[in-house]
Length: 319
Image (cartoon, rainbow, N blue to C red; front, top):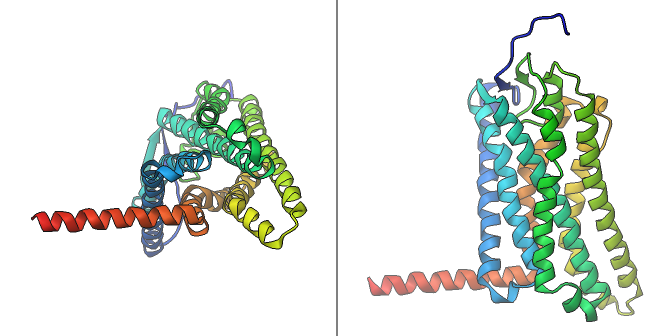
């Protein structure tokens, strides 16, 4: 390409999802509804965890962190997705695209590490209950939470820095609704071998190491549950980690399929469909799973509603 003249690209155009105007409007309403419900559900969990003293334990502190993460994770991509469904011309600057790439993968890496920490918490609670207060004290829990965020934001730095040195000279159309790795690499007129290798190495290391740590924790949990003599005890013990295991299965199933594979195997249509699942659907499914299967959260939610009703009734009496 050295002898060919290229016009430098300063912004990209999102192609989003093709379809008729009626289909676009339908998808817009669906995704907007899911997005707003996701924001409300995750915000509610954060408020409940902060307000209810019985939930000031490592398990629910991690859950509050996860809900806070999901709010920003989905907000990183969904607004642009909604915009592409309303307008045929939705652009983003090159700097904005790289910034979106960094924050999207930072949130994803943080979630991987955070889910592994939550699995370790359940492992200690079930396999070493007598040492739980020592191994998972409030201070250790806060350090693990902070470490998840710090590690998550450090992991995508190497490929992001390399991307800033790429040249983009057309075409400027991104066949996606956000700045994912493969669509960015396809638009560069520079040699992307190094940044692709570093990018997929970083994502694979974070995803697979977190996944293996999570599976290791649950393997030990399963062994411990099997050894319990009472069927009722096995059922009760498993119920304490069933919600987290469900979330882990859904999340890792999608991101491993998407990001732990050779770059040449990427399919843009399938990639966009799977991206909708973990960018839009999963952030709503997670709080629903935790609230529907967790008695402590449901009881705290009832108390929260009762307090709100009491305050409303008292305000009405005063006026």
